[in-house]
Structures are given as structure tokens and as C-alpha cells.
Amino acid sequence: MKIILLGPPGAGKGTQAKSISNRYDIPHISTGDIFRKNISEETPLGVEAKRYIDNGQLVPDSLTIDIVKDRLSDEDCKKGFLLDGFPRTVAQAEALKVFLQNKNEGMDCALLIDVPKDFILDRMTGRRVCLSCGASYHIKFNPSKVEGKCDVCGSDIIQRKDDNEATVKERLQVYDNQTQPLINYYNEEKLLKVVDGTKAINEVFDSVCNILGRDK
Ligand code: ADP
Ligand code: AMP
Image 1 (cartoon, protein in one colour):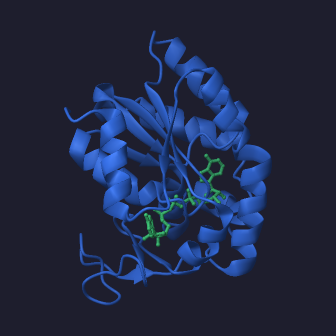
Image 2 (cartoon, helix red, strand yellow):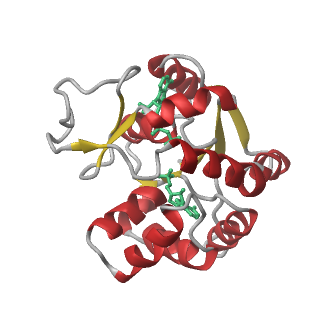
């Protein structure tokens, strides 16, 4: 199973990705998580990516595409994978298509978590994340059991630096200009499926399972 999660920042991609990855036993590949790990480890990639991420801009395609190709070449991706936050531009989508075509493969589904703009600011400014395992919480809608600690791995949970109002607005603009065209792109590729992302987290997951199928 090879799945892309589409949707604006704050739609709930990371939240659903954790459940999908567990349910269907496929690796969850989040480019945002990969960049944040590199930033916290102060690698050259992290230093480069930070310049863009802190300003709400996209990391350049060339850098991002290479990272994803590398990750998709790992052994665990042979059984399928779930892409969260990639592709974000048509150039990334084209590069992914060519990469898979060269192996006589293709994506199975691009799943759009559809959420109108007026939900986003609340979701993102209330978001708290675990830098260690990538789990995502919300101070109102999905609080961790112990305040400030991750339910999954017990590490500290923090507010992302780019989850402030000004950067969120910038990211939404970037989404409109560069990522939204992918909805049409995957519609034309006959891969697009849509779920209503305004429902509660478990209801959204139920809709996702209806689309992906109840079997693994
Ligand atoms: P994305 O990965 O698309 O940027 P996240 O999965 O991190 O989004 O979700 C953004 C925020 O919204 C998080 O704080 C998360 O806990 C919360 N959230 C996710 N899905 C829902 C939902 N269906 N209802 C309410 N809040 C949600
Ligand atoms: P996310 O965790 O998906 O919200 O991503 C956080 C930030 O990482 C984004 O605002 C971008 O700056 C960067 N990023 C993540 N994925 C990509 C991508 N596919 N292309 C370019 N930049 C990305």
C-alpha cells in the first residue's frame, strides 16, 4: 500500500498518519519530522532547512526530493509507505512519479484531509508535538494524558517554533500557491480520495479506513 496524505498544514495528516501506519503496518514518512530531527541534531541539512522552515517557506525541491528518494530506498518501504507532507509541489509529485515508474511501481491513493481555512489557526496554535517520536497533540482537542509529556514515549512535548500565528498565515499562503494544485494533479491521475477532516479524530480515521479498506 502506497499512500500520500494531502491537506493544508494543520489538517490532521500527522495525527491520522500515526493510526494509518499502525493499522496497515507501513512506515510513516514525514518530511517535516525528518527536517525537525536534523534541526535538533544540527546537521548541515538541518541548518539549511531551518532557514526556510522558521519563515514558513518550503525547503527547496532538490533537497527535499533527494531525502525522500533516499528514505524510499530503505528496506522497510518495500511493503509500502505513507507519505505525510510530501509531495508539496507539482515538481515533487513529478519526481516521485518518475522514481516509482523506474521501478515499475506507482502510488495507490492520494488522500486529501479536507479542512476549511477557519479551522486551521486554532488547530495549529494549540498543537504540541513530541520531538522524539513525532506524536502530535492539541491543548483542547487532543491533550496528552500527562501535561507536557508524550503518551507514546514519555518525552517532553513542545510547541513548534513555526506554529505561531504569523508563520501559520505564511504557510497557508504557501499552501495555496504551491501545494493546492496537487489536488487537481492527483484528481487527473485518478488517485484522489477525500475525507472530511472537520470531524473528530476517530471519525476521520473511520472514514480513512472505509477508503483504504478494512484489510491490511
Ligand atoms: P498536520 O500534520 O496536517 O499539519 P496535525 O496532525 O499535526 O496536522 O494536526 C494539527 C493539530 O490539530 C494537532 O494539534 C492535532 O492534535 C489537532 N487535530 C488533528 N486532527 C484533528 C481533528 N480531527 N479534530 C480536532 N483537532 C485535530
Ligand atoms: P510539516 O511538519 O509537514 O508541517 O512541515 C514543516 C515544514 O517543513 C514546512 O513548513 C516546510 O518548511 C518544511 N517541509 C516539510 N515537507 C516539505 C516538502 N515536502 N517540501 C518542502 N518543504 C517541506
